[in-house]
Length: 418
Image (tube, rainbow, N blue to C red; front, side, top):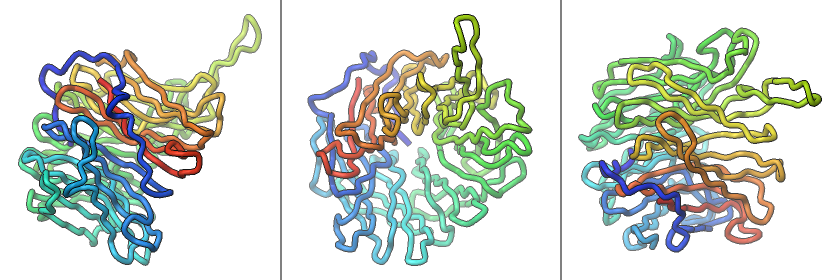
C-alpha cells in the first residue's frame, strides 16, 4: 500500500530529477529489484534480492534499502540483508508502510526441497525489527501485499503445486492470522494465479490475477479481480479478456495476464497486464489495400472499471513494428489519472528490452511518457515498480543488464519524476 499523496499535489511537469535520483545499484552479479514505496516523510524504501551478499554459498537473499528525500542512502539501521539459512531462492516481492510509519516487507524463500515459505517482516523507521512471521504451511509464492488503516496485513499469491491455486490471507497488526482463502473464480479454484492487491477508500480489498478458461472454453488465460470486505466477504467478481472484438472466443487463445491493480479516489479500478495476440497489426499490401491481422506477440493493456465492476474503457499498447509490450505496474497519479510502467521490445534491437513509463488521464489518453534504452547492448529491461510520494512525485524502479558497467551483470536503478 502506497503512502497517499496530498489532496492537491504539485502540478506535474514531467521532469526527471537527474541530480539526486538517477541511481544505479550493483550489489552482486544477479541483482533484482522488486518493489518500492514511500513514507510520509519522503523516505523511499526499495526491496530486492542478490547473491553473495551475506553468504558465500551463492544462494539468493533479500536486501532492503532506505533513501532519504534527497536520494541519499541511509545505512544506519538499514541496508538490510536477510538470508534464510539452508534456502536456495529467497525473493522479497512487496514493501509497504503502515499507519505508524513502520516498514512491512513480504516475500518467500524456498527450502532444500524447493518448497516455498511465505515470510513477513516489520521494522520501525529506525530499522529495528518489530515482527517476524513465517507462514510455511501455505507453500505460498507471495506476489503482493497491502496494509489496512488498522495495520492489518493482506497477502496474495499462488501455490507452487500443479494445478496452481490462488491464496489470499489476512493478518492482524501483530502478525496473527485472521482468515485465509483459496481463491475460486467462476466456481473454479484450479489454475488460478493471484498477482496483485489494492485497497479502496472504504477499506475493501481488491485482489486480481489470471486463470485458464475463465470467459470461454477454451479461451486460454483470462484475467479476473474480486472485491472483499475487510472481514473476508466476497462482494464482487469480474472476469474479462482483452481480446479484440473480432476474435472468436471459442477458437482464439489470447493468454491475458493481469499483473497489477489499483483503485483511484473515486473507487474506479484499473488493471494492467498483457495478452498474446490481442491487438491488430495493419500491413500495407499496396497503395490501395491493407490487411489487419492479430499480432503474433504480447500487447500491453490497461482496463478501467467502475466501482461496481463495469468496464468503462480499455487501451491496448503495441510497438510500431509489432514487438512485445508488457505492463507490470500501475499507481494513481493523484491528479485523476494513472502512471503505468513496463517494457517493450524495440525495432532496432529486437532482442533487447526498453523500460517504458506512461501517464494517462482518467479517460486513458496518454499525456506523458518516458523510455529508457539499455546501455552496452544488454539484453533485458523490465519495469518492476512505481510509487508516489505525498507531493505527487513519481519513483520508478527497474532491472537491467550491465547498466553499472560493461560486465556488471544484472543491476537495478531508481528514478524520480515530478
